[in-house]
Amino acid sequence: MKISKTMKIVNRLGLHARAAAQLVKTANLFTSEILIEKDEETVNAKSIMGILMLAAVCGSEITVNVDGDDAESAMQAVGELVENGFGED
Image (cartoon, rainbow, N blue to C red; front, side):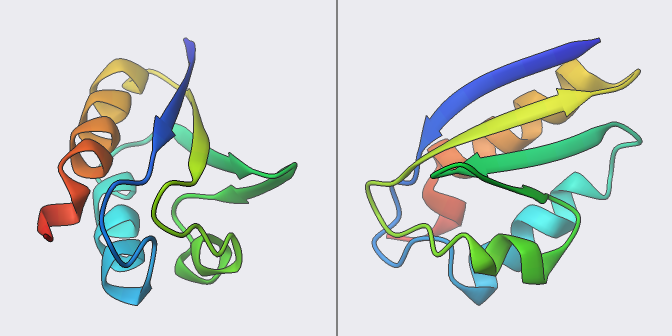
């Protein structure tokens, strides 16, 4: 199953190292492939270096693409993490 959703980065510091680490930790809980797009660049959500390369600041929009058997659960977990500002602010 493939799912795609566009999300807005709401935490003040954006996708910095701590937030990226949380995203990687969450993504690695699932077997699905999770890719994140920003400004025509696509990275693996299970790679902290890839996520940091997106340089997603507060207000940026990212598109999360999930493909796999647990896609719905993965999208929900990633969505909650992003929407809750990675527990910051």
